[in-house]
Length: 68
Image (tube, rainbow, N blue to C red):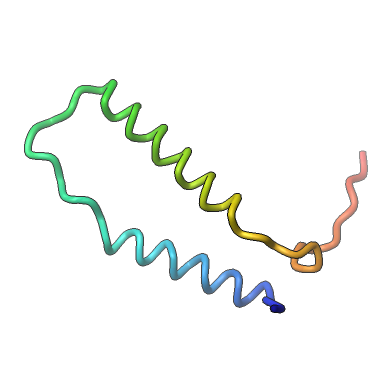
């Protein structure tokens, strides 16, 4: 399956829209700062696992050269 950069961008943007529309319900009480930290770390870990599951072929990435 070939995917262009434009299709990749559209799918990534659609994922962001869906995640912003489907927001978790607000907690009834204000949580402690440590709870927010735990939730943020879990969210980052879950997102990293989801991104690691996606196989992007090397041809999708733009060509570039690092120069000092």
